[in-house]
Image 1 (tube, rainbow over the protein chains, first blue to last red):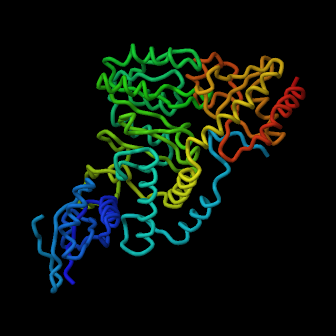
Image 2: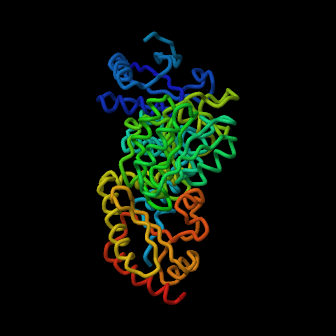
Image 3: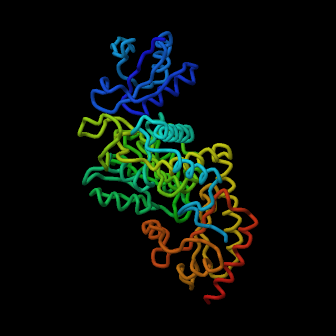
Length: 84
Length: 374
């Protein structure tokens, strides 16, 4: 199952994003961001299944929930930045 | 015991408040720090509380809900964000030291709108005359001494019309009457968690609608490489470890009020205090500060005797099991405005947990106290 990470600047932003997604029926996990993606240190991310990324981004836009970069989780453990 | 000091702190809380605090102590760590289950539980609780407060006060979004230690802390952040030395800040004549001392500390020029007690029209006219050209307006929603409900929605409208930022001190109104941030268009709204919101001491809230300036710096669990405070809320204003047991308790207080209904609860408090005031009026020598227009007074009432000191009356009532607060209530400006600065008053204030039955006993206990002191 391929997953995408939606980066968030803080825990509260990530919680707000996850909450908006859950309300829209999109399952979203919340966790601390991987070290390699935490450029400024201590960031959070919300992850969704690949097929739910597009609707998830629409939900976040409608909810006015700010988010950062998007990454695809590769099978070898790396993260590849993708455009919105 | 009859507890009538809820304007200071509500003593009786919903049972769930204490239970949630104990659960938080046993199971929760710090939000935004570890990624483990106890940290996640703490984060979930903090966010649930932000969401509940956001709903209750119609705030822009959960991240605009900032946890503070108390209302004073919240007001200090709000004022530090808006007020520079020499700024002209218009305030009502019913403000608490949390506003007046903070403004003096910041070097503001304090411009007081003076108007008679319970006269909302006069207060509004005073604000109308002074708001143009002001740098900021700060107003309490309800006087902590007299329960005077200020016309804050109209004052906020005047501020919007003149492009002046408005700060609301909702210390006595949060949880007891409708406080609508969107309708007010306020720059900031400050409130305690431990009064009308029925949470524990050590909790406060700042609702943010304007750019803010931290009064404390430190770890936030975000952007840790940077040596500057984050530029986003709530992290910008929440340095250091959160009071998670307090926030867990506050959440349950807010949930209780959501179920009971803030306006219904506040209306019941106003009825209780009005009935009490009417009964106390029959006591010789006792001045009862009761509004002619009942909508101008909340569940807070001050009394003062012509020959018995307020502290003595307060102590005598305390000895009979009636918990009140006497003196100046950290609001010398309000007492000066009402002409009670020298003698102070005895304040009686209720919460949703007071009953008509217990309040019916109070006038007799006041008489007994006065007889003993005469």
